Image (cartoon, rainbow, N blue to C red; front, side, top):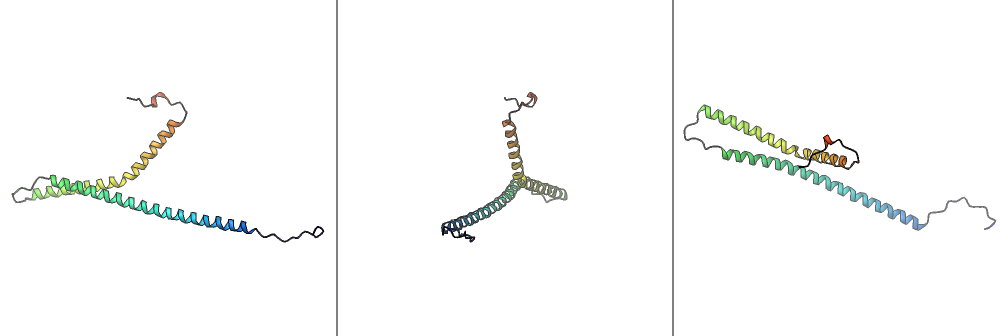
Amino acid sequence: MAGDPPSHRKRKAPVAAVAAEDEAEAETQELRREVEELDEGLADLDRRILEHLRGTSTRLADAAVARLVALRPLARLESPTAETSIAEEEQLEKLNILKSKVEANIAYLPKVLDKMKESVARCEKTENLNVNIHPVFRRKCL
């Protein structure tokens, strides 16, 4: 023992260390699964929000068109002439153009909101900087 040459064999890792590694690996796998589930849930929520926004824009445009149609004067009892039918077609065409523009504007609202948030964040960041701003660029409080 005391006079024996040193053994060059590697020692095996203690059983407790192996168990700790297995437990850490299992915990890591569980955390990865949770992150994947959360990512899937977030993607699903994002998809549902976009569907809701698209549906809202369509419903709003349809409601506006229905309201404008309801406000149109009642048709005369006279027989329709070519002039009135052309005028009604032009009004209907203008109404469809208005509807498509309203739908496009409503669909673009999330992007506008994001840009507004970014601008507000930049303004707040500039306010938090300790630099002297020329008085010309300061806003007057009313």
